[in-house]
Length: 357
Image (tube, rainbow, N blue to C red; front, side, top):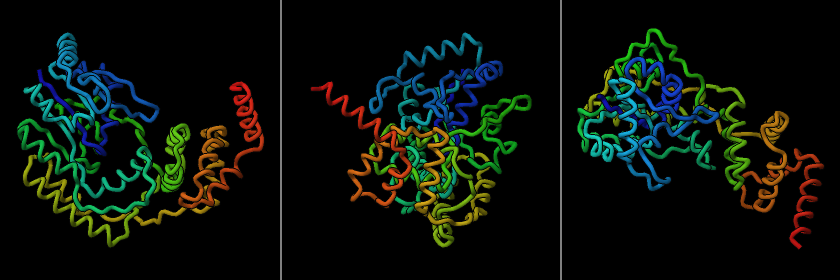
């Protein structure tokens, strides 16, 4: 039986692949490929098959031979010739998996580092609390450097590497391309997957970036879901043309070294495609006070943000006003909040204090 671990890496459509594979579990099984099913969140995101072969808590996960063998048994029972696992978590643990499962093959996608920069920034604002503006300071893709080390440690023959580029994907589809890598005919299956883990519009980035200054977990969750569907997804760049060309040159040099050192499908076509990449229309990261207010009012009106949660966030912002970037936005929060919310919250606090006494 073939054992394949899809490891991403990050920013190469892993969530889309996992969502499609999980939803098409039965179809894959009929093709002889066993993919353990898993849940996805409302954005189509998941940790994939992490918990199918690793156990423990975050920061102390370890490979479980027992869990792995259970999945092998299920694949055999289903009369499948291939067992497929997928998780970005596998990327950091390739050596561990390779030692524990010596027959394992690792499949992953290579994306041009310049394209990753803006996407990674969007994700950092969206999920990791980043508050500063886009300002890249490195012309090197750390993922490629790390992957190169892992390939040398595990062995080139154990890797299947493919370029992440819509223009190069089979049928311009990531899913169709992934199935081709698995030697599966996709002629009679729908390979569309819809939007997964959508990026923010520029306006959404600026709203979330400001609220990232505040410790309000409840609002952060609501904002993340609300802002993914707010605004137009314009094809814009946060790079000036000069910076774009400077970074492009550095990333092309790194990509060329990697492609020369390792086996990547359609590598010449991929490098040529990356060389033709041009900067998109450049936009500044700016959001006026009136735009900020309009966006928040829209999200409140659509009931995507709880007024009570917004009030609690306002209280936090008021206390930290002097330390905030653009502190004038605190007044906007107060302006949006209806008086009844303030009264209800004050009464609730008064009742709570009385009960304590």
